[in-house]
Image (cartoon, rainbow, N blue to C red; front, side):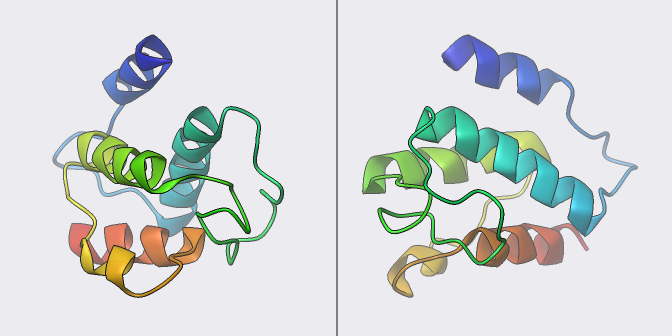
Length: 101
């Protein structure tokens, strides 16, 4: 799995290009699917929780997803998202989008 994530990072954005929210969503969904290893119950909605009631990521996998996103986009999602209960895919995407602006 590390090889899949690493090769995905290599196709990242350049410092002069800012991805759209839809591009960020697509990339975060891809990274999350690599972390969930097919266990995700609902990948269609942006409002799906990252945890057991949605993408079925445990706390370690969520932290690794945050690190994957930091490597992919060059910005770290705020760890405050983890303290706010069950972060959703949309919350993570919005946080990355705001950090890139």
